Length: 347
Ligand SMILES: [Zn+2]
Ligand SMILES: [Zn+2]
Image (cartoon, rainbow, N blue to C red; front, top):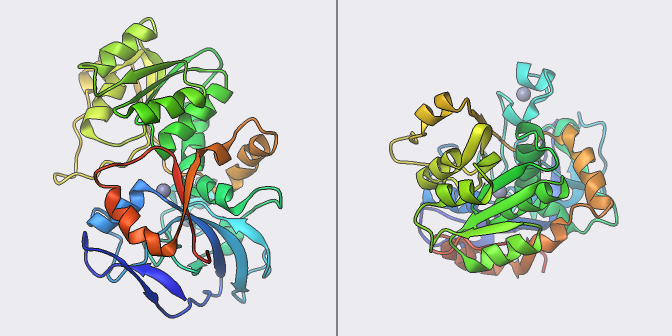
């Protein structure tokens, strides 16, 4: 099969022929029809992800059809249309048994712990635990964007963030996950303040339901701007980018007893990120993490997509071939980019 491969961190990836994967006894191989390009792929390529071993094939947000099935799989057959959370759970550890597959103790992640979906085929573990059926009317391109960013944003806003109608929700960073969060929070009846350095990203945020926008490139104190626009601070605030500055701005933009949800990954040389904990104490803030979404939580989200309440299809801004991936990956460093790029490995 053809796949995007990199041999060294940060050096150009290339597209080459590699052996086709075979399914584990509990796993499947999926023919990749669409796969999203995400900032996590860039982090992986830069060497920020300790799970990766070289040479490596990135890609973790995918949709396609089941091609081959392991002997122990009971729920899936070749030809089934599927997507998968980026956290593939084991199904048997204490977290999985409790229903928290998104923090599985023995998780695998395509594109990180093993070769991913920037390829014509990808192997996925524990198919009966992790695969999600994709209805005929949902395109593969749209389904691919659910697997990471949209599902992550859904859990961050709805489950971890516990958003309610009428609340102010601040979203710091309006790339794929941030724009998804804007759309989901607005659909839940929240009033959304979108914060980003890019006017283009803010235009999209407005289109997806943001009531207010803060241009962080023009604004000295984004937290103060959020507090002013929301009459004292957001009830719920997300750092959807993942940087010390956006994390602090998110926490500092909250009102009393507000909830901060950290969604953007925070890779750093020191391994830690300073958080304004004094404010968390004085204002009784809640500081939460959010990590993907388990497969069993997808039906509720997919029903809102089917009903047209949520429109992940509007987030897809471009479709490229495998051959264009090395360049697109490199370009992400300087311009994270708004919206979602979908890769079509057979196109
Ligand atoms: Zn992703
Ligand atoms: Zn587990």
